[in-house]
Structure formats: structure tokens, C-alpha cells
Length: 310
Image 1 (cartoon, rainbow, N blue to C red):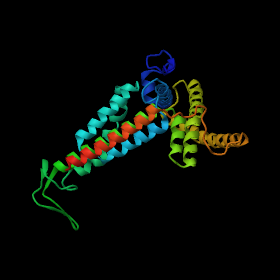
Image 2: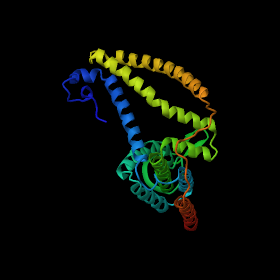
Image 3: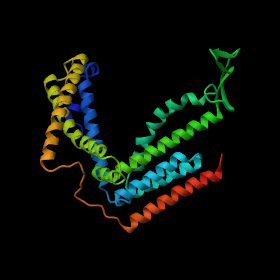
Image 4: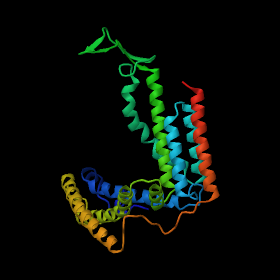
């Protein structure tokens, strides 16, 4: 999905660079909306490809991924974890999911947020252990009330490898979740969740949110386009932010009204809260074989981790 001409930086319709630096809040918001819609359409396109995971029964696929997810979070050895990640990348290749896209979508974000969480655990003041790198040596020991800190502030070997282990677990777990959502259509995924006894209200909420978020996104885009056409890049940043705030309030009221109208229409057509899809699930021998291989792989990885010990 290409950006409209007036949203492109080199367009003759775009505001001058000085005005763009002063007030480009609406333009950035429109770009964000277009990017969101583009990624959503791309995910649906991947789910419709004729790949290995796309052909699996969603129920068996969900169980297979769930077993791998549990196993990944139980493993304590990095070689086994990254061996599992290599298998995931092979599955992504067989499913016609670009590995570069999968890697970038996960590993450009996970190390940052997870790294911030585990940063304190690197130091000996939080997690004592063998010093790996001494950062600072104080003249005397530090005391904060009843808490005693060592003279040396250092990164410990136990803290460092523990942080690497946690980041690896989180990254590989998120990769599994992303691969599952990329290779499964949203309606099929929700119905598969229903078969493993996920509460119906939770499934219905997810289904309605996903379906009507695009309606609200379209409405929001129309509002911003109308504002941009009248504004022509001349309003200040404060005025644009006030417009965004009022738009959010209007959109919230519109969503409440739409939810009531949609629910009334659904109940009038016989909706009882159960989800149905036009294409029924068909369990095949290849699906049973795949779930069997997944369970055997999970048990083998867990057994290997226990044998390695540590």
C-alpha cells in the first residue's frame, strides 16, 4: 500500500520543511494508520499462502505451538533454546514466511524491553555471583539502613547468563506466537481457541475487536484526511494535538454507539454467543502426525535439558 502523494516528503503538495518540522502531527498519525492497515493486510496474505503450517488443522497447530511454548520456557541451556529457534525458522521457511521479516519483527523490540527488565539482575548488588566485570570499587562498604552492599559493583557471570537466558526465552516465545498468528486466519484461530475451552466471552470480545477495529480505523482516517485537506499544514502543533484529542473522544462515542447497534443486529439474526465459520475443520492424518512429532520434540528437548543438568 503506497502512501498518498501529499503524504510523501518529496511531493509538491507537501508542506515546506520548516512547516513540516513545526507541525506534522496529523501527517505522522496518518502514516501510522496506513502502516497499521498495511501490516494487517500483509498478515492476512501470509495466512492465505499454500505453506506447511497454513495447511495444518488450526486446532492441532495450536496444541503443537502450545507444547513448544511450554518447553521453551522450561529449557535452561542456550544450545537447546537456539536449536529450537532454528527449527522454528525452518518451519517459517516451509510456510513461506520471510525469515527476515520474522526476525526483525521480534528481535528489534524484545532485547530492548526485556533487557531493561533484567538490567538490575546483572549486578552483584542484586544477584551475587562470580565477578565478570568490575565497574567500580568503593573505598568502604555501603549501608542503606539494614541493607549492606559490597565494596565492588560488578556484573556477575550468573547475572549475565541469566539475562541472556531470559531474553532468549522471551524472544523465542514471541517468535512462536508471531508465527502462529501469521500462518492462521484470525477466525480459525479464535475457533481453535474455543475448542481448548477458552471462555466464550473472551473469544467473542477478541473477534469483535479485530473485526470492527478496521471500521474505526477507516473512520479515523477519514476524519484526519478531512482535517488535513482543510488545514494544508498551517495549523500549529498545539492545535493539531487538540484536534487529535477531540477526535479520540468522538471516536470513543462512535464506538459505543456502533457496539450497541451491532449487538442488536446480531441478536436479531439469532446470535447466541457461539462462533461458527464457513469452512469446517478437517482433521487429517498429516495433522495427527504433526502433533505427534511436536510432542515428541518437546519431550526430547526437555529430557535433553534434564540430562545436561546445571
